[in-house]
Image (tube, one colour):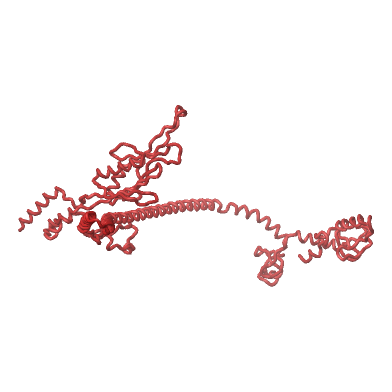
Length: 503
């Protein structure tokens, strides 16, 4: 069809021939196309004579007008038939016999077949009819079939569709709830892991603090001794060439006294006892921990510490375990244990930042309950407050606790702002004052720690860049686990009397 359409196309307008006219050279063109060319030729002939040339072969012709050219009726009829074929629907072909049109209707099987199917195929003995008769018959059958199909199980299908959609919606809702539970579980698990990690890392910080508290004083003593030795050496260098007897004897006396003091000063030990907590520390032991036991993770504890001392002592007395009773009565088990605490203070312009780190979480919890930070906030505007500065209200907030062993807070105002909104005040119970100056807050915090039994061990600068001050405190307190209750004495007496009766 494409090749035929190419032969029926005008070479000027590239469309199917419309009223085709043939030139003496046997080339065909549309009438309207030739009229356009002849009009241009006549217009040019006014200036100079030029014969009409065929657009295809350029052969001259003596045509004076389009009407004088012969109409190609054969080509015109072919074009009209081609248009009818092109507009008419395409006839289907048989799938079993390639290229054969389905132009016969089998009444027995109620389907279209080709001629080969009717003569040599599976429909040889069936009843046939023409396409027109089959169309009329099937057209009447379509109405009744369509009406019956329209009502066939339609209500049942709609009810089932509604049931399936409802079930789908409920299933998705249940899955959404379950997925939310999974998210909540893993969020809690992540929170537990982060909390446990911070707790263990805080324990490490506590041990680091204990190591610094143990080593720093001894290191400072050695530095002082070395400085005294350098001073003595400088004194000797200064008077060894003195020729005046009196001056030399006087300097010699001072040098001898200096040497005596240096020799009598004992040197600190080079090896200090460190905490035995990390001797058997190995994270590979945590690989066997189940998720439910994550909260039980902790650093290895000192084997010499008995948490429940009273119960152990009562059981030893009850079962008359004399060696264990003697061991528990030894004084070194009841030795007090020190509690360490550090205060980091940073003053920057009109703001002050505090970080309190302690080895005992109960001390940090006590300070958290006493310290309150108040933030200034403007109160709501009223009709009578437009002509006056806005009144400020103080919003109380507790200090932040990044872990069990430290807390952070700040006071003062931002110096970059012109007004005083956002000023932070700090109050430490039982003192009711609200202080915004960092130095005053530091003094009040130190007084509170001193009243709680802490004593200042050292004060130093941690960083020369930001000038962070560090104040180290220590408190010797008898551990509660090893404190004997008064109620234990009657029980101990009764058990000892029973043991004497048995003997």
